Image (cartoon, rainbow, N blue to C red; front, side, top):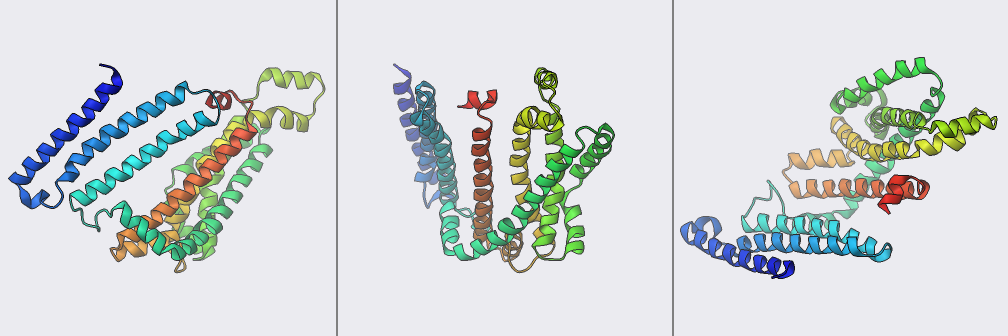
Length: 324
């Protein structure tokens, strides 16, 4: 018996066994499972079926030639895994009758997302398009510029890097109230929190990238009488690009988290953090999860766009070539 037939047999056997057990449990304690006992049978079937499908797609992706088909198969595996998690979530919440206050079903969250799309769009514009984007650009840009300025100054590096470690250890809840007092309750205070959170990761990563230049390349450019600007442009910055993009991607998620948490400490009646804190007080958890969905989509899309830009600009790097 080959592996494919064995996997199919295991799926059928597990589904039949889970159905028998669910009926037995229903008879023993009907008060718990009397509504939908079939959900208990679908859960192991879904797990085994998803595992079989993902293993099959993974094998096909490894065997496919480089190109569009291979990329599609590689994207199908995480997409199927996400769909499997959502289906399990829906089955467990519906089958066991989990109260909506504890955990709403994905279908309920999706319905709320589309019903409250205008409100969610306003919150997104307030939090991401203003606070996150402005703070991310200022924090990453200033961190990059300062790294270039102190690259040849060891005493400034020794002075700033310990401060960066100290600032990284300060929790957001300690910085946010101070920034609200300094810059007010609007998006500027949230942008200031984002600047503090993103400045030092960019500074540290850029310095590490500038120092990771190949000494052979540096010596070759020195042999051709290359000046400081040419050394920076032709050797150091290309070597630092992977480090810089690591900081950009890390900061894209840190910025969103920082802005949302900062909105808990004072904001106009709009914003993703304001929406979460308000709806939690109302026990309106489906709206809370819909806001979380918007944050997850925004963070994932921004991270993915930066990763695509990184592949375009660092196509020569070994990590990018091996990933392709």
